[in-house]
Structure formats: C-alpha cells, structure tokens
Length: 248
Image (cartoon, rainbow, N blue to C red; front, side, top):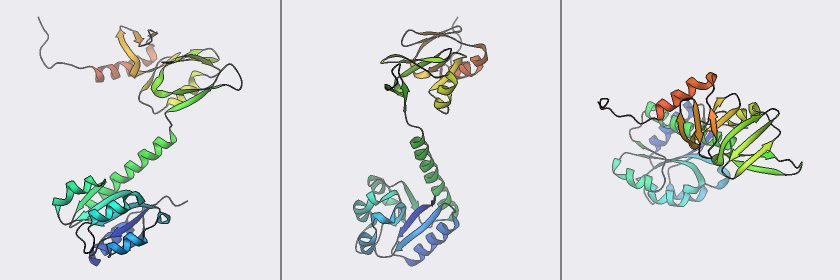
C-alpha cells in the first residue's frame, strides 16, 4: 500500500512547475501524480480516480484564476495549497478553504515546513480514526451490548473480576478488569487513574478536598498514594492563580 501523499501542481509558469516538482521529489512522503500549466485543462482532467491529497495551485493564471478553479475542484483534494507571488490574495484563498498559502519565491525550507504541518495534521486525523470516542461493553445478558460514549464516561471502578462503569446515563457492571479498560483509554488525556481501583474523567470532577475527589455524580474517590503526584500536577496546572500577594 502506497503511504505517500499524491500531489498535483497547477501553475501557468513552467519554471514554477519544475521547481515544485523538484521539491516534491525531494520529499519522501510525497508523490507527484500530474502537473498542469493550463487551468482549464486541469479542470477537465483532474478526476476522483487521481485520489489527490495535496493540490498546489497558483492564483494568477490566464483563462481561469486559481480562486475560481478551486471552487470547482476543491472537493477533489484533501489539502489545498496556494502558491502565489502576491500576498493580497491570502484572505480570499482561505475563504475557499485553502490549508496553506506559500508566497513566491518559494524556498525548499519554506516548502518543507509547510509539508511538515500538513503531515502532522494528516497523522492526527489517522490517529482519530484509530481511536473512536466510544466503546461497547457486554451486559449481563450474553447477547446484550451497551455503547459507552467517552464524553459520558464519569469513572471506572474495579470490582474484583468485574468493573463498574459510571456514566451520565447510568451504572453498568461488566466482566472486565480495570487494566483492560485502562489500555482502552490510554492516550486520552481526559482520563486518569487516581487509585488502584479507580479511573476518573477529569471533565466530571466537582471538587477536591485533601485526598478525596468528588465527581459530578456525587461519587467520592480516594486519591491513592501511587497516583497522587500525577494528579496533583494536573491540579496545579489547571488551577487559576492570582499574581497579587497573599491577603493579610
């Protein structure tokens, strides 16, 4: 499977096309599919089969401007990058959902930084696809499954070989270990293990008193010694502070 991003260049100046072609060839994550010096020809010949990831397009072109052309073919590409010698079109460019605006002359370093931003965005989207914002649990009946949305998940409580799932819609008990749930939530900054038997959602904390955490459903969770430092660091970072001196 080809993991490279497919690119198309549209620019009426041949030397500009040649320059971007060289830059694309130098980037291991990019692959040039087609290039055009005639925007009208590009309008006709770019198809859904091209599977375009990045479209590099000039704005000032004879016959049809890049801004006009983008309105016709924007849906055919994941990312749209305008390349122009004029900064005056920048606002209009983002008005047609451009992702980047490269001002000519374009250096290799400027080009590489732009691609790096797009690749980071692409990786983020792929990660979101791999980590859906919900999971299913099996209820007491063997053929009954309950969907748990992460935005509704308040806490997970260990009960020997089972866990109690506290949500805004109710409480469910299922045959899982807290370790298995922790692995599912790994990498999600909204959840933290605060005790050997509890994982909580930071979004549902109502108050913290000493070593006791109260959640929005009135559940009180004791803060475990092993997890205390991590939780207090979070609390310190999220606490609003004044720059004024301590009152008398």
